[in-house]
Length: 181
Image (cartoon, rainbow, N blue to C red; front, side, top):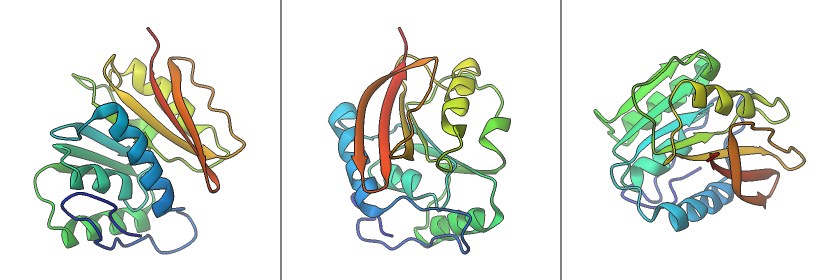
């Protein structure tokens, strides 16, 4: 695993030990960030969340491309160690927050984020449940882009958002969503 683009392009990332976490493949991340770049233009100063973060590769990719802040949420201890090791190796300071908790235990926020990326375990439906909850808690507003990675055969059932784009890459399906009008 490596950073695809930006200030840390080519830098290797540590993946969590064990079989609990399934890191997003480089090719899948490259496709996702191409999809996002065509919609966002720039990542400059965006407020981003990497939920079900695993190694933190999605959030680190956004930071490498200029995001202003990234929240990493993960509950697996090995994955949290990997996120912290990656942050230390890249000397990321001050513009990150790592929370060792379930995405579903997040509370309300004062203002929505610009980009929320979710990579939950495949086949659980946890991503759709999380998105609907995050809308209710104020994390997702009119300007928020949501990226949800699922298995190829999964169809996200998100009540509060509309699908803007979908792409199948390897064993993953990448879905970009926005809040329903």
